[in-house]
Length: 262
Ligand SMILES: [Zn+2]
Image (cartoon, rainbow, N blue to C red; front, side):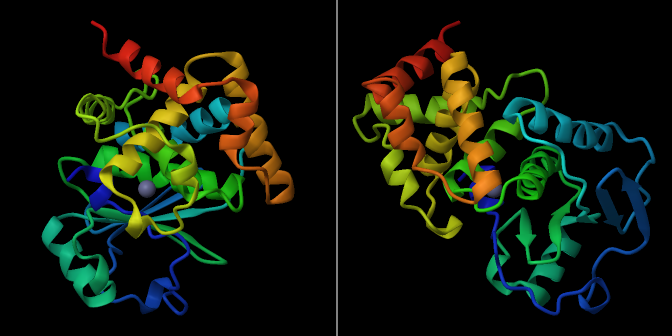
């Protein structure tokens, strides 16, 4: 089971009343404010840690790649020093989420990320903060697009969003006849809890296909997001993409195979 499946992002979860002062056991020892990020930790986080620098820079990456204007709404990040402390916090406050390595919560007034300083904290924070950045820019983002973009931007900078575990999984499943691209099926998903590992991987694949292949596909995605941002609604991406080019599922498979070439 891969990281994101564990680090499910429970968007829109009801946390009414969960203010900073009322959540028991939240990290409060150190606070670091960098642009819109407010990072609370229970250990001393170096002021210019390279991970923090990367997370701050990622906002501009997201904005530039998706052609969306930056919003500076604060995102609150609670960073635990150990998995043990994090698990104890989850057990007391979010008992249904205890198998998740990190997660993102959005309420009407606050964007919050919870994570711990483990081996995969960089990947987890890139993923969860992508959700945070996206939600400051575009309301009503379809779940699968939200997750696909988070999977794209969780990859370290300089790799052009290539998520190799996803690529390998999709090609293997396709070779066994157990997976075939189906964007319409992704568009039916309404709960992160219903998403399988393959759903996350395919969501990433479509986003990579649209952002990293042709200008026409990239423009289509950017225009789709712009429309969502301006009006809160847009036609399904599947219908827009089918209008742009036929047999798009086959084109996606060709793209994945191209990515697997040495
Ligand atoms: Zn996510």
